[in-house]
Length: 291
Ligand SMILES: [Zn+2]
Image 1 (cartoon, rainbow, N blue to C red):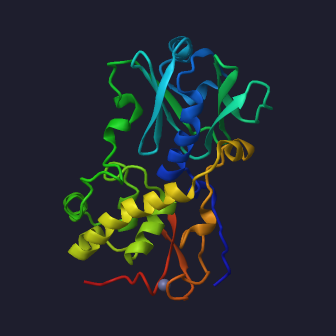
Image 2 (cartoon, helix red, strand yellow):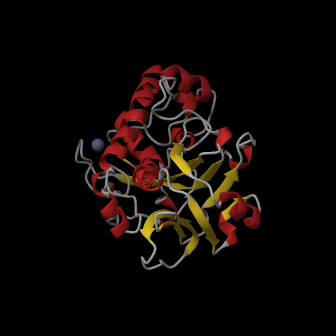
């Protein structure tokens, strides 16, 4: 097998819950209690709702109270109860910069704050989206309503996972990526969760045993909490690397390590495609069971 060393392929390096949480914890303290005095939309494509004109009109003059996260969605919460939702999708980056900070290529939106700083949105591939939702206006337009449980939610039990998934014939790896079951897991952490449980990524949900559901219910919050912890970064370093939120990739146990030795047993890790997504696993520690 050709050697594959940390091959992070294009569509696999999307920010997942831990990376989005990193963005929130870095940005929130810098913008709380700040008022937005002007908005410059350089690329209207990133504004999903409402129209660009209306979006700018609604944003201007608002004071930011706090920032929230749900799954991979971020939101700014304003004093008047309105909310600005943001999904970074594949390559979105959110920065708070001094006004005279050099403007990065692919900057699509700039919000001027009353303290002289700016909130900037940069996105190489332009799949990220903003939604401005008024207080009392339905949030369905954002997609946030469809999200399943947060990994840290106490209701995420073996029973919950089994009730949602045991009837499904799809591979467990695919179902971990389903945001309507558990919100925030993407390709990287799905591989890490499966390695922690010893479950083969292609194992069908309908073939999982009660012990597997219990292992998943434990590994999902544990691995995501580990991701948040190992992603910690100072605001200075965050700005210096222009919002690149992946701090822990060298610490990942399987993702991007195809061909390298398994950290548990030493056998070479394998890389396969499951549901169109690249997946790394240990063929010895994560054996596929036949019924
Ligand atoms: Zn192994």
